[in-house]
Image (cartoon, rainbow, N blue to C red; front, side):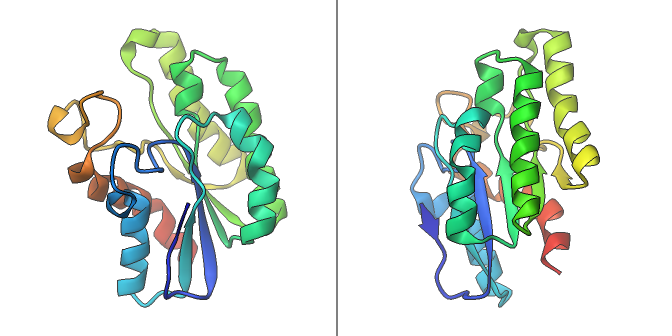
Length: 190
């Protein structure tokens, strides 16, 4: 878990999977660490806590969220979960139910929520991929949260931006992920 130092005001809790846990990279090179650096450069009064776990699903995230909210008391929750549900072919309705419950818990705890979407590769079939992608926008609209429609926006199929597994972004891609998240996060910090 990464905790930024130097900023002692409000907390941004990043709650995600391997895409936010800097899988395969030194933690300091992941987009969450880069976010903490950006906030420090801007002399923001926000600190960043990364409670992301590689392999996490929405059901696993839901099971541990109340403790994370109680411990960190975030002003903002960046919720980046769902990719592992999709890769396992779990029902989209189940993922939506879990994400909705996490959004509601965070809002009840006083946190503003930024929901970060992901897409499934086309080999999961057009119906599943369409339903999966639409889930994030639907949840954001229904629960009035901020939304990053697609974390990997702008990376396309550029293999130079991915690790050898072709799933996890490499170090060169982390600033792109940060910029994608920043677009949705920045308005929540005012």
